[in-house]
Length: 440
Image (spheres, rainbow, N blue to C red):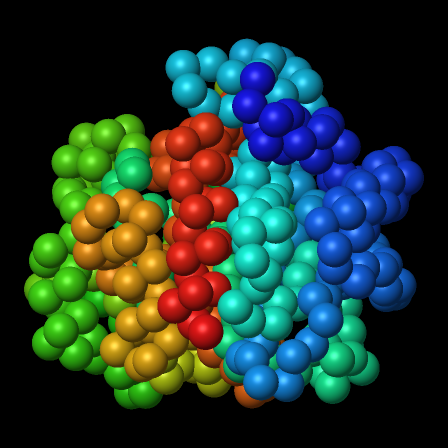
C-alpha cells in the first residue's frame, strides 16, 4: 500500500462522530492524532478547547515577508448508520476499484489530510512559499456552533491573507472545479393546530377546518405554476447571475443526464427559464423536508387530525438574508391560513450565502493551480449546498475562502459506502503544493 494512503487509513479508523456523545473519547483521540501528525511535519501544533469538541491548530513559523494561507477542514464525521447498508464496516477502510471506502473518506478526512501531506512535501523540498495555518475543527457536522466564538477569541493568531478549503464537490469525476459561490440557508417548522383532539371525520367533516388539508394547501402555495417561489418579496434582493456566470454554467461538464442518473428521478423540474445547473446553484429555492399529521398506521382511521406540521428550508443566493426570508415566509403562511386553525412557526438554523469573484487575484491563482494539476481549465460553479462558516470567516477574519473541490460526484458523503478515489487523494497533495506556490 502507498504509505500516504496508509496514513489516511489510520485517520479514517477513528470513529470521530461529533453528533453522538458516546464517541467523545474517539473525537479526542482523533484530535490528538492530528496534533501529533502536524508536529511531526514541523508545525507548531496544539489542541484548543471549546465549549464542545476541540479545535486542532497548526502553524508554520511566520515569516513577515510571506503571505499567510489558512487551510480549514474538519475531523468530525457523520454518523455511519444504517450500518447494515455498508458493504464494508464504515471505520475499517478498504480499497475497492481504486476508491477508499470509509466514513469520512471524502467528508472531510481525505481532503484535509491531502493538504497536510502537501505541506509536508513542500517542507521537505525546499520549504514553504507561504506561511501556513491549519484550522481543523471537530463540530462541522453539527453546525460549527462554537467556531465563531473561537475565531473571535483567536483572531490575531489566525490573521491571514486568504483561506483554502477542500470540502466541496467536483462538477464531474476528475474535473477540476472551483466553487465560487454557495447558497445560504434558512429553515423553519410550521405547526397547524385545529380542534382540541382528533375528530370523527363523518360527524364533523365539512364543518371544521382540517389541519392536514391546511398544511397541504400552505405547502402548495409556496410555488407558482412556473416553479418560482410565490412568497411576496422573496426575489427582491436576489442578485441575478452575471453573463459570465451563465456562460460558465452552460459550459459545465455537469449535464442534465448526470443529475437524472445521480438522483434516480424520471425527469428534472424546477424554475422555468434556467438550466438545471443554474437552478441548483444560482437560484433560490423553497423545499419541504418533512411533513406529518393524522393517522399513520395500517388501514383506515377516519379522523380529522388535531394538528399537522411541515418542515421547510430555503436555499438563498446573494444578497438574500435568512432573517428577512423567514419574516417573509411567516407573513405568507399567515396570509394563506384560513380561519379555524392556529399556526405556530419555529425558526431553525440559518446561514448567509457566500460569493467569491473568481477573477480576483486569488481566484485566478486557484484556477491556475487546478489547471496545472488536472490538465484543463476548471469549471466555475455556484454550488447548491451551504457552508455558513464561510461568511463567518469573512465577518471575523475579513478574508475570502477558495473552495477547491476534490470530492467526486458519486462519493456518497453522509450516506453508506462513502468513498474517495485514491487518485483524487494523491491529486489533492499535488494541488496543495501548486496552490501555495500560486498564492505566494
